[in-house]
Image 1 (cartoon, rainbow, N blue to C red):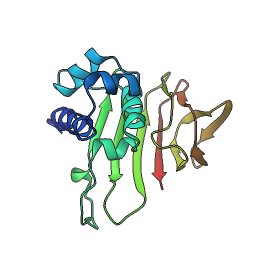
Image 2 (image 1 turned 90 degrees about the vertical axis):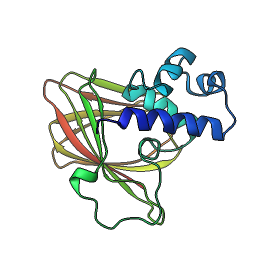
Image 3 (image 1 turned 135 degrees about the vertical axis):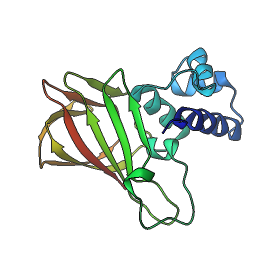
Length: 182
């Protein structure tokens, strides 16, 4: 979507202002520099996956909720061309909201793809204790939750409640997976 950066910039600014936070307040809560936040809010740059993770933690909402505000009432059918796609080209990471957050529904489904030899680290969960079900579609992915590493292959499912840092890492092949957030 060509204007996704503009919509995301406006969304982050609205969330910050609704909480009465200055750019400096958000910088302190998210550990993202004030100058980077300003550039994101002005749609001059697109945030990285790690930056989105830090912002969602600061706002205490899932990355999906940050990217696609909750709409009410929900639409039962979400066609592929209506699903938001966010990309972090530097990491070769894509995140498609297959079933975006909606009023009245508690689960979200996100399809992710990560290029070979990449690592994405989130310092803190968006929402502490948030339930995740990660289903591997293809490739191999090492998921680190705290100090525990889980190596997943196609067909594997990792179920967890996220309380601390997490890392997603590929080897010499790309990985694609679904995350169901409850």
